[in-house]
Image (tube, rainbow over all chains, first blue to last red; front, side, top):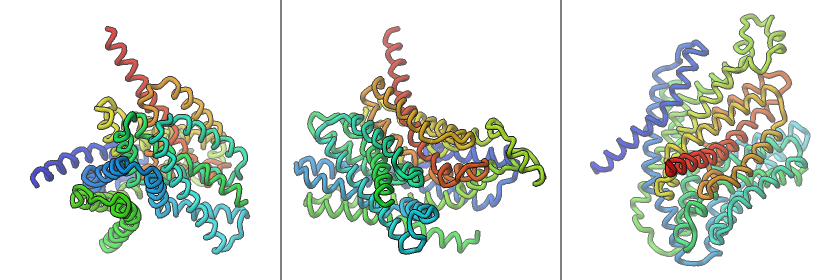
Length: 245
Length: 266
């Protein structure tokens, strides 16, 4: 118990250090550049305290929960030796963490509005919802496929750069043909999918897998799942834009 | 904001975080019990860990929404305000002054973009997670702070360059394609061990803290500069923020390799 408290205190100090730059930047610009006093100092202090505690608890939970479960499941699957189950698990993890992602829901709704304003789809609620739903599903599908593909890559030991460079080549080619309205949203969707809970979990899964398969190096083979998961949505969203229009 | 508003917000955020985590937990435990069929070692500890993550993330988001986001958004708006940039007081002079602005008049915007990009990346929880893991896996060769600082530097450069692009109005594709060419060349020369991690750091950066502030900056700027479309130009910044860390992390590895070699020689 005393150990936990000491650890939490240690985490809290490093959280304070992590947050110091952002507070410094905002205070400097508010007071010096814009030349206005800080509004609502009380609320500001409470907010900063919450952020500090939140980051501390999150990092603590990361090492207690998210990292161990990601790794222990990777080891268990490697020992079980069933590649199909592992791939199904990887797909579900990618799909499941993305389809309910609030940031994605917001971007999809925004995209539907853009499409309706541009006259690409009918400007009524039903067709906009339909469009947003389709977009969400295609992004979630692409992330599921990306994680499954990335896990298969780890098993086979293929070099990551061929996937990434090939994928970006595809993005560049598709950019030339996709409707201009969808391009900004497509580029954006890559960043939206990788949430704060997914990243540690998927990283632990990849590293755990690479370290339990013989002949794989966790540095070279374990990382790269996130990169794939932020690449495929761009391809799928542009494809969605091309098919739907 | 009154106390009851804050309380409402806390309840809402915790609820939203729970619904966010629920599918993930369902998949994990579903596969654990149905497919792996072995009891999880340290089940209690893992569950408590999940609870810490939930509470932590909720508090983090509430705090950001209470303190940093409103101020950051307001700041982005004020810094990109035509009157502030043109340095005029009256509305009558404003339209003429805005038309005559050169890209150099936006210097505070670039500085803010650089600093806020750097600062938000340092506070990004998912980057901290990846840095901890990378440090552990590499046996300490990849330093937690080395990685985080180089990613933050990449985001800072990317976002300020992205702001410059919005101001001058170049097509985004040129920058992104040129960036990818640099990435491909670096991939050939960078140490093999860093490449996957560098690619990953591109996706990691654009997360909870960075996206809302950067999006506000992009949208504000695109609204101010004559002839820009907020919907197209406002979103482009995120693409910059995920491209440049790839370069900076590979550069970090290249530089530290050169330094180690030199140290060995002497």
